[in-house]
Image: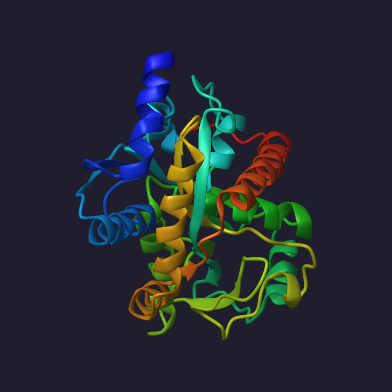
Length: 310
């Protein structure tokens, strides 16, 4: 073990000296995948080493997380994942610790959820939606990409804070959850801007507010749920990079340094905003504190609401 540690220490100076492996926790084509591949491209351009992206979806991102948790902590195996990383400890029996077994690198982007309704639902804002649902307890359906997903928790938080009873209909992925609200079979959802706003702009859905703590740079015209009548409500969807615990700090700082350059690069920033992603690029220590707070927050909601894995 001592020899391995010495080898890692010696390798820090010329890191990266070989290809990197980025394990992506969700399926191809989604926000986590898109964000991870964009970062991989930036790392390759900056350092001249290829980044091999490997999708390992399943079990709320725990399959990918477990693989990275057990990898050598030398900076060559990285995890790109979502806020699900902070939710899974309350939902699954894990063989890794989502806090102790990882070195947070950076919160790369936030993906604001947009609270939307089908146009047939006669509401124009959050207050009207709450009143509408209160008059119809256990009748109004909302969709999500699965039990315990960010979509699910956004709506469950709305249920609890507003004192309403929307009924959950889980799907296997964001796309089918959106298809059924566009088709009028579901009344309400809270899904990413990239999934919803294309339908809002052509009148297939009506956007009421963003679910994040503050207005989104990508959809600045929408108010937050909190400022629309439900103070204190906030759920920030995020995509972030982790390394295995024990990864040397100089390597973590080099990875974060490139992410920090990426989020302020004008063409990249414009591209991210066009996809409904708000660039962040938080440093490792700040992100580590955020992950701990998120884990406590969502763990409490999962337990109180009795949310179980699919």
